[in-house]
Image (cartoon, rainbow, N blue to C red):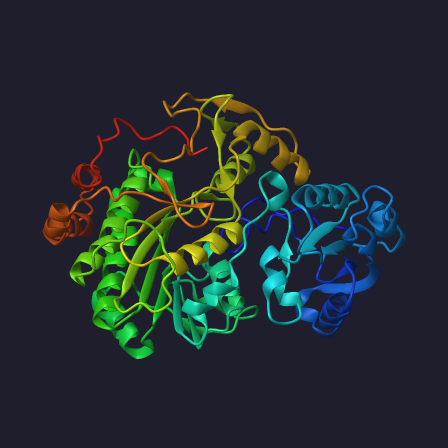
Length: 495
């Protein structure tokens, strides 16, 4: 039977581990062929996965295109027949609408779901239990067919020394999993949470680092030891309400740490550096800190003397270091996302606060966002600022309804706070231009060459104010550097 429900937000990254199953789950695998047999054998031989295969439901009829009368229609009956606690959907190419339908059927039958992610179909090896993901997040949103990183990503990863910062978080851990599939020469996992890094090592081989990115010398020393050729910078502080109260924290975690990494990358010959940002709305302190951090990354292009590219073009042999940044929007599993805020509000008894009954937001899972971030990193030639186009916006109230139903939570009251935000809380940025990838767009940099020249002096003043925790002064400086008006008051809700 399903284990007791845990409080929302109990996961190691504060987000996705909302159901606490028993130590070993009786597991039904849905799929066909040798890959399923290999997966079943791995689950049976490796108890750490916590999944004991008890049956396999062949999906061959579905794979041939029939609909309705195929073997998968028997799924709820097979779950009951074998008293299955969990169902593994081992069909990476399953159409999105079918995926959602099966997920809902499994949940209604009283089982939890694990699935092979979409990029698994491109892996040059058989799937194993370490590749499985908990499904629960994905069923909350509708969208187009999920993106996958193309095989060409291997051009910038295979055989390279790759560093991932924020490796233990929702984004960083997914980055490590997908990068591992492209066979890097060495994979370095950097995070301040040593315990979470050890847990990540159970899924992904790599060398653990606990470098303090706030310390410039310590960061430079780490680069000198590991000499990373490729850096994916996913670390950062993304809790909007926290940064509205303490913008100095945003400067230290988002701007200063990025500056130290960029400086070390330039000094030690890093070939490719991609910063991953989840929010860049300059009307908030969170967004403003990310805007300034973007300027730090893009400014490195000017330091190396390379002209910024107009838009993305694949580059197989970069002769100059490539610095770029990509905004990936609201990631469901990440700290500071709408769902973590929602979980926190539900755990404290509500009400859930929303700006307006018709407010919408676009979402991405970590898996989708990382696949496109890798693609953007491959495409970058230097100086690009990217944004992603994922799912159609959804009503936030609909997300709340699905959330409570999926996790068998009581209906929660909703309070509309009218914080002055637009109804579309994730509108398409102005001035974006298409690239070779239909879901990746290039944005014009908000900072011009003259501003880049002044950037070091302005950053020095900002860092001094933040070091003394002079939050009112930091708020003013961030707003000015992000080239936007200073918000009159902190938002009433991040939902």
